[in-house]
Image 1 (cartoon, rainbow, N blue to C red):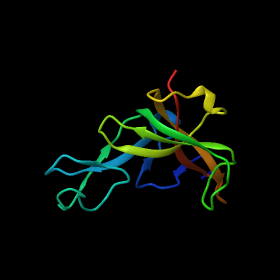
Image 2 (image 1 turned 60 degrees about the vertical axis):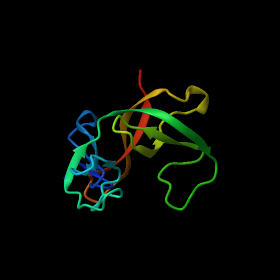
Image 3 (image 1 turned 135 degrees about the vertical axis):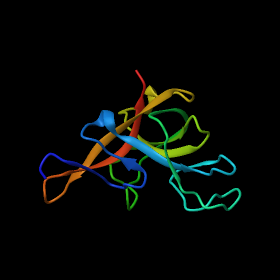
Length: 137
């Protein structure tokens, strides 16, 4: 299994054989057309079962961000790091690590694109992949 890639959380990130094939996943309610991330079993607006998984795309807009200087229990990256709120085209907001070295390189309203990173190697040699965002070039 050496060289393979597996998602840290398969319900929100489908990984391919390369970064270019990676996709963020959400869900949508067929009844009221609301989108959700992470995917949910029931609609928060109308309580209908949500069975439709959707590709949320690979781009969003930086809505807000903060520089984290204290490592939290489940942080996957070293401090300091940037945690951002990314507004997706469907109107949902995703909280994500923003993979830049310096917050001075960010501006609210800036276009971001999905980026994935290896956070560790499994014992079998496969790469465990998590999602993040980077500024669009």
